[in-house]
Image (tube, rainbow, N blue to C red; front, side, top):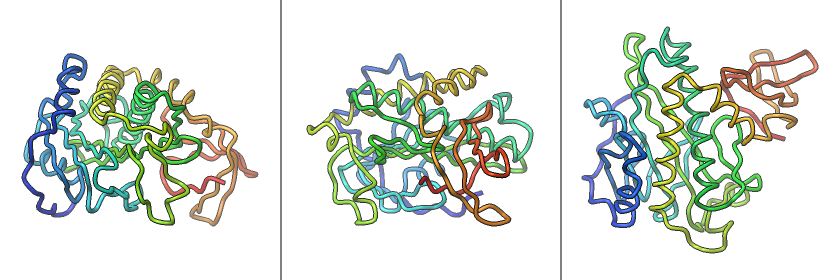
Length: 285
């Protein structure tokens, strides 16, 4: 599903603050970061993790970079990743084929990846709330916001060969520090430091994220997606009552969000009735 991957530089030892923070939470993160690949800069952490997974890397292999040259988000958008301003992380996940929504062909695999995005959203929102005290909220399907400004983005990408899911790369980027964002992002992005008015320890942010991800991923694997989804609904007030617009196959649509269904699809009430949105581009008005 992906083309030839770009060459990447050699790994460097993880900085002390990151290594020490992960060691402190090691008993709580299961396979996550059992193998940690740290880079000062890479084209994209998702691409590095993909190469590792394709070469047989075990579940939980974690790629961390201080900078990305070609970071990307949903719909192929560029993810602005200035040096030292954020945490850019990708994790190799190998969901069991009997996990809800994973087995049964490409459609089910897509649903499983969408569900994993929501699982990650809950885990990261909870961890950022815990470590910073900020009122982090989720915007469907893959953004974390503070005061309607983007703090974190999530990108899950699956590899499927002959209809069989091989792995999912779960990537996320967290804005830690003040940065010079491009003009088109300046009024839509924020960072933990900007919101708190003080620095925050990146090692602590990463460690708490891995703890929360490990816990929620176990719930997902144990078939308890409903419990995760219930928490997601609490953390995503915009999933009900917000006005959105999108381009459907038969033209532009507009409606009001009406929650998410049990599969994590966004429900939107329009003049024609209730629409179910699984993927695609939404404009939040």
